[in-house]
Image (cartoon, rainbow, N blue to C red; front, side):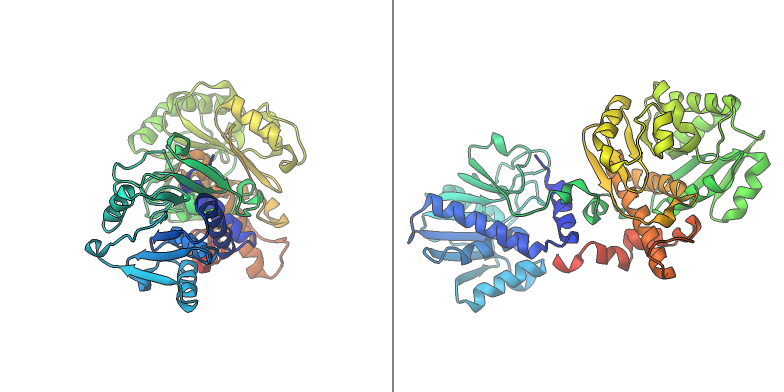
Amino acid sequence: MITGERMAAVDENASALGVPRKQLMESSGHAVARVVREVAEPGSRVVVVAGRGNNGGDAFVTVRFLDDYDVTTLLLGRSDAIGTRIARENWEALQQADYETREVTDSSEFDLPECDVIVDAMLGTGISGSLREPAATAAETIDDADATVVAVDVPSGFDAEDGEHADDGVEADHVVTFHDTKPGLEELAADVTVADIGIPAAAERFVGPGDLDLARPSEREGRAFVVGGGPYTGAPALAAQAALRSGMELSFVAAPDTVAGEIQGYAEDLIVQPYEGDRLTPDQVDDLVDTAEGYDDVVILGPGLGNADETLEAAREFLESYTGPAVVDADALPIVPEIDTEATLICTPNRKELAAMGGPEIEDLRASTDEIEAFAADLGYVVLAKGVDDVVSDGDRTLVARVGNPGMAVGGTGDLLAGISAGLLEHVEPFEAAAAAAYVNGRAGELVADRQGHESGLGIYASDMLEAIPRVLWGDAGERERGSGDD
């Protein structure tokens, strides 16, 4: 089972793997035509009622596979407002081939011919709630008609996220849904056909631009609160800067006063809050928790902390008191399995840190996804295990991020990953944030290597990658990766 939102991401990933959306649309339209042929004899009257999105585009393809039928296509809206290139191309193909089509620009103009079959392709998985005109009038007319209704992917008015069906939605007799069933379809009084349209399994297994689409911030908001530094200073500075590059408004670093000035020196954009001492101790915990809770911060705990006993005790006390979202990295990771916390966590261990947490001792993360998933299930938090290929799991779902290059083995890239994860965690759930963060971090490394002219990435610094993070999230490189030409 797959939600409409996740299905859109899988479509995008498939396109990035080399399976064009137009090809998927061709397969989808053919699948709908097969069901129409099953429910009606050749020569039957078929009316296609289509919207201006890709759901309508699927139906335009369907028409070309029904030449043995008497087919009329009703487009709700003007053809010059068809919203995607591939849907528009399939509409134009109907015009060039002289199929019978009409444009319905006003609900008062909607006139459904007498027919045996109606293909409902007005609204797909991206639209939910009560229908608006002219779809509302069309749906009412369809439901009143004495014809068999075949819905494309989901009936118009059906919410593919939670399975709710609008009161004025289309009541279909048959639903042809694509790739996998959608939540709630089994509750409808309709025959449901799940059509394989040729999406590779890799589109669901590997993190891709579709996963980035699910997590990309649409506005700048949120505060990162890095609790790190002491023995090391670069790590908290990199994590804090990466959070800013990922769309946060402010990035704070709480650090010992012995190193606060050095951390501030890395970037004037950071706000450094010093506390007394040369390392984190339990004495600072109450104030740090109050700050994080009071400002609804996303915490990044661990970069550069060190592993002194009193520091680990302070990290333990912090997480047991804190109730908000946090990314736990580096030195703070080993205490996670021991704690009882209400915090929402993403844990970002490398192979050695994963084993130190009580997870599997493995060389190849990608070959050990089942073990990592089992560990994440036992732990109860999202695990983003970082390596040559990163593995993200919440104990139920698991994705592999196979982006990046060997040069990213340099110190500091894990700190960037923690910061990006925090930036995205401000906007989406932990699993989606972690998966997208792994993709952004890896692509940033690839872009820097491309710019420097050596694909291996050998010789890049983690700090080189900071500028590439927003390019992956929002810039031209991200647009190319998302395959925007197929939309």
